[in-house]
Length: 129
Image 1 (cartoon, rainbow, N blue to C red):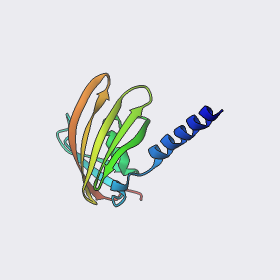
Image 2: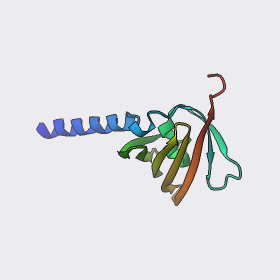
Image 3: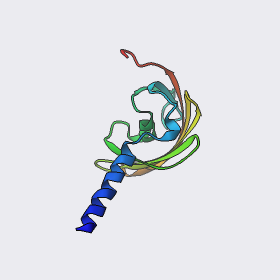
Image 4: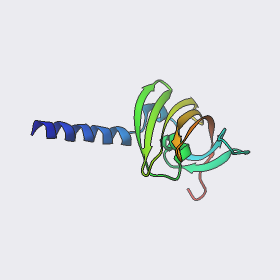
C-alpha cells in the first residue's frame, strides 16, 4: 500500500514539474517571436508563442510533447521533452534579455539526431491579441 502512495506522489511531482514555468523564463513574455538558426531555414521564422518554454521543442513544434525542467541556474534553464509517437529533445534556454533568448537544442526527430543553436527574439504581439 505504501508503495502505491509513493508512486502516486512521484507521478504528481513529475506532472507539477512539467507544468511549472521555469523561473529563468519568468520575465520573458509570450508574443510574436523570430527564430534564427534553424537548419534549412534561409530566413528567420516568426511564430506566435503563448508559452515561452514551448520554444524548447522547436524541432517538434507541431507535436504533443511533455516537458520537464531538468535544472535551472540564474538566467538559464535545461528542459527535456518527450513527444507522443516518438521523438525527444533537450534544450538549454538562456535569457540574454527579456526579449532575447539563446536556445541550444539536441535530440532525435524522425529517427535522426539533431543539434543546433537558435537565436530567438520577441518582435511584438501576436495579431488579434
